[in-house]
Length: 219
Image (cartoon, rainbow, N blue to C red; front, side, top):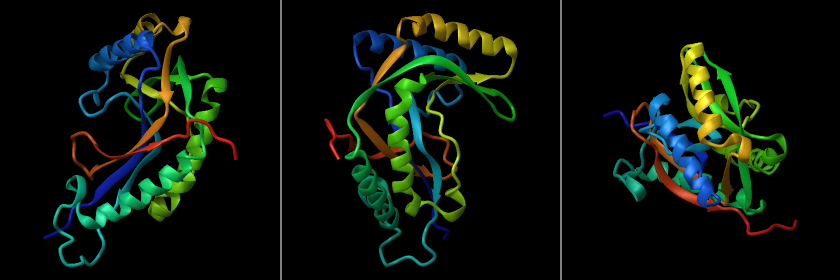
């Protein structure tokens, strides 16, 4: 019987920094409910290490087919433990901070445009440094073909625009309801999450472990 392959990634689940930000994050969710096909599969988040395949080993050790921690088979637990430990070490080198999502951005994809919120360059700088460190920490766990470097643009998806009218509507609602002219949505960058699911499964990812950033950091 073929064994299931899995997909893993590292994300920042968005946690509002204050009461006003919580209200604005609710508006982001309302927009996603209308426009984002992934609404039911994802909480608001920023991907830090993109999804990568974790194939099963060629030969199973005795008992490895049984589910272990968090419902994962032991061979996957070993990979996720190693990834989580390296992620935690990387996070410990970075101080907790806030990230302000203040701008609307667009990625052009094959069938649609991804419309999203992104931070200003100044606000994004600490997160960019964290992401580079996390990418290096994850590299030994990625398959060789998954190690290519792509420019990282931190963003939180609002939805998919198939027409210019879709795009204009999403941008208008985000500007108005997420109060982008008044500071946007501030989120706390204090933990990142290692997540996984069976490859090809349509449901949400499962949280495996959280890694905390340092309260403050001095090298």
